[in-house]
Length: 180
Length: 279
Image 1 (cartoon, each protein chain N blue to C red):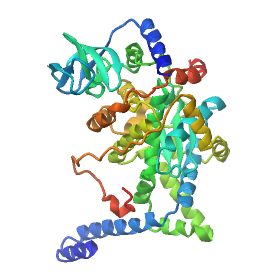
Image 2: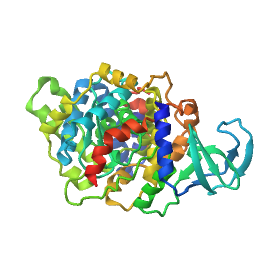
Image 3: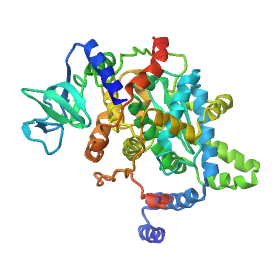
Image 4: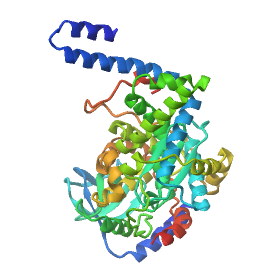
């Protein structure tokens, strides 16, 4: 299944010629292999523009002055924050990270939507709710579907809560039933 | 105990009558709400959630495509099975709007808009977003927020549901109303960050590449924030870059699962007809 995905990726890379770029979000180590304990080739300062070549797991192969690997989440993929929606999509297509062609979705105004006002004026729609209920899938069928794509369930703990950074409006969860 | 202390403090400051009222109000809220949530059983949670779901469907109906809806339900159910509330009867629906958003309502209702679905590129991305929404249901984020916003006594009235009298029905309708309005305002941003952390784990548990959700956030970060189809989502969620930043701190724990399948091909194949029709 992975192979299918890779072939698919390659096809797309072939179709998209333009190079893809991103910016480092903070000072980031450029590694010679996609592992935390790989050799560090250089330290890229914050906001370094890098050319993105490929992805492997949690890592992106990039080229700055030299080729190397950085963490996927240490890079903001795309040209920058001033892009229009459209070029943003295109740029992700070009990345070839399994990204399909742009859908070119345009917003049809005044049809139906989920704006703030739409939500405030919403009236119940019991017919659609009934339709929704009928679509429910029994767990066994979902499991079969997952197995057909060789998805296998893993035992993984939830991520720890990060240390409280700022004192926002966080209310003591224990007061609310305390199931954390 | 705390109430008593605050009362004493407030009484010792006779010239700050307003402060006194404020504090007392807050404490009363906390005490009342704490009692209320414990009293809501799963049946009532589902009842509230289905009422809100019905309203959301009133704003935007389901995409009339049985194939896509079934695909969504298969993935959603598989991801939800990896959670501690696999016993809920989970419902997933694609809403027929180009607005970019996703919603969950209490008791196991999860919606994604066609606009957001068509911006995705793989099943792993979809699994991550559904995982985020499932996370809201698991943690009862909306239920808690509704209780924070509902007027005093409303939940107590609704909880007399057992008797099914007119008063409890009225109260339930009010709760659903308050609940629906909440979707225009959004949750506490900490709830969104928490749902992100749950989403990536549920996707990984389901056997997907957990980086699907971060990749969707990358896509969102690249869209023009002025676009009206993004207005509500951007208003009700922390900025995509802030969410990426927050995930970046904990995600390395999941690195060894990052080579699990993305299933881009199956996703694109299922969605292809939709994409063409929408152009």
